[in-house]
Length: 60
Length: 150
Image (cartoon, rainbow over the protein chains, first blue to last red):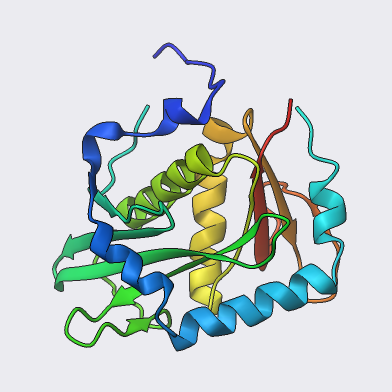
């Protein structure tokens, strides 16, 4: 099988298998305990690790 | 190029994704949420089962619906769609249980070769270690991903 070099993220998206529902965005304003826990973990990780520093080294 | 995955329903924000896992245990609604953590573009990826009656989400349940590869491919599709809309942002993720973290690790490893030319992936081996560039066969407990910069 011929390998296609991926040069853009849109090449990896299967547009045929997508549909939109704006009502889903209600979850963005809901206080869902498991998401709150993840947010707390993520804030702690951002503040107490080299995460932002290593992501700053990102280059092609 | 596209591995088998479920049809995704997407919120207008492109931060919420829903799909239905189908298997021997029946139809199980799943939800993927990208939550903004900071103004410098950091988002957390959360993934769990959605109770359509109550709206509650459970990320600790193990569905055992015999479709983990297809579920993983669907989560990865959501990640690609997120980055297509938020190209400068960083996504971090961690499983809520050891088995779910293993699932994330499997997913990243499986899609690593497909996406390594355009995704910058890092991992962390424990809660106090530094993040490092992702290497296959290392048992990372959390991950951070960003589109590669030119």
